[in-house]
Amino acid sequence: MFLRLILRQMRHKWEVTLLLFMAMAALVTLYVYLVNSAGFSNRSMELIMKNMGHNMLILPESADPGDFYLCTDRQQPFPEEVAGRMAAREELASKYYASILQVREKVGDSQAILTGIAAVHRGDETTEKAHLVTDVPPGHARLGSAAARALRASPGGEVTLRGRTFRVEQVLPSQGELDDCRVYVPLAECQELLGAPGEINAILAFLCLHGTTQEGMNRYQRERMGRLFPGYKVVTKLHIAQGRSLARVTTSRYLYCLLALVTCITVIVIAVTGLQEVAERRQETGILLAMGAGYPYIVGLYVFKMLALAATAALAGFVGGSLLAKALLAPVLAVNTRAMGVVWEQFPGVLGLAGLVAVAATALPMLKLVRTDPNLVLTEE
Amino acid sequence: MLELDGATKVYRQGGRTIRAADGLTLAVRPGDFLVVHGPSGSGKSTLLLMAGGMLPPDAGAVRFRGEDVYRWGPARRNRHRREQVGFVFQRFFLIPHISVYDNIRLRYSLRGDPAGAAAGIAALARRLGLAERLGHLPGELSVGEQQRAAVARALAGAPGLVLADEPTGNLDPENAAIIIECLREEARAGRAVVMVTHNPGFIGMGTAQVRLVAGRAAQKTAGVTA
Picture 1 (cartoon, chains in turn yellow, purple):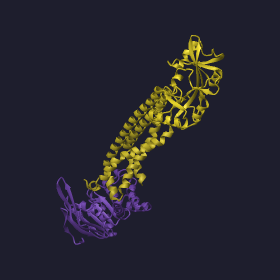
Picture 2 (cartoon, helix red, strand yellow):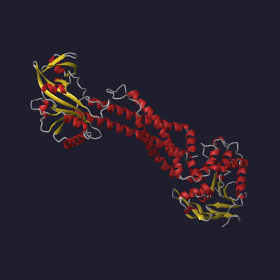
Picture 3 (spheres, chains in turn brown, purple):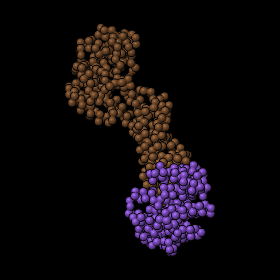
Picture 4 (cartoon, one colour):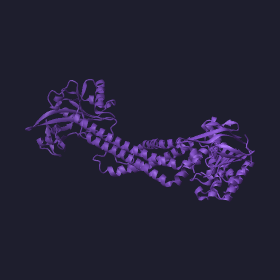
């Protein structure tokens, strides 16, 4: 009978029920649209920032970073296997390690930096979260734009360094950085050319910035590195790390503000409708009390109805919001990691939130209901 | 069955004090049909609400089968109303979005007796001429039918005490007579019935009468105990 009362009331006042449902569904749609579009935008922006390259340099504790930047003869070599050990430690916040061995080379009137490079993979890398470095095929070289000019090389051609000929796999676009002068070759081949088997000069890594500030994550990383790899130090490439951190903070705060606004509007809509409904149904409240139904039963009629509406509105709004985000945002994103669509993993959260908002918004009308004097209602002319 | 012992209810409105019940003392036994009458504002409805466990008096006591109703907690009082009290109001207060059948069934449901509903509703509908109207919504019924449905709901589950507040106030003479006769039958069946009315023609229809003036029992017939 309890459910029957609710369903019949919803049917009897179907216009109000429909309006309430549409209001809630629209707000859930907006919520899901914002969450999805912000989530995918954020991910896209993170990828853009990730594509800017590694944001950490790992060197031996006693090494002078200047020697690495200037590629001097004073660089301190260290075992290549260190990078593998780091990649195996999941306690570190860093990922996407790349081992580097570099030496300055005279090329005609100019100079280039012969750079042996090898990606060091971690077990939790996925297709979506792929390594930053794609390995240079054996016998091939990948040239920075300035190095390509100095060597007069183009893709498909050949370059000879220290007596070994490499086929040019790719010429990288100019980045306005030292990397334009690099000639990337497979690390093993570089080690062989330089007579330094198993040695590297530096490790490039990417510090993830999940869940805290850049400063917080740096502290965390340094503490872990100091404990696990005491002979090594971390140098942060600040502009890349900061850019990524600020992008994340900006999108997150923007999203929280919008979501808070949407939640407030939802609560107000439900509360106002609820207050109106309590006023309209005061005689029903009065007679139910006269028949011995307690307040828990009567309040339950309202709350259960709101929860049922919230659940259906959550489902409709979830699907609507997801599809809207897909339709409006997918063509705009500069970088896509995965196809946009309905992310069903979010639904339990949306459902729970819709329920909480419905219950919270019903609190004020229910306060009015229990403060209504049924005797006044039953004796009013 | 029902006793009001010096029951007093005072309302304060804008600095004005209204004594809606002023030391009311009376008793109603099973089989009594007490008619309460008096001018508007004399406290008739207040008497009914106090008697039904809806409105606690400021002073005095309301007892049902010897127990003070307002010494019970809200849950016990709710149970009392579910099981022992049937209310009828001038404005019916049928729930508009459920059928007449469901309006009556709701009372069985609240009493925790859904099994008894089918037979009980059928009997009440036959008695009150509602058999053809059970599937209709209250808004589809005539005024007389709505009041008969409200009476049927009040009588569902055979409560010991029936309280009717101007049940004939909006009705034509034919429907009013049906309602009055139904209430008299209830009294004859051993239930205590208290009816408030303005209609002088119905004052003599009960087994006893009380005339209220300014919250006081200005006149009681011999049938009114205490």
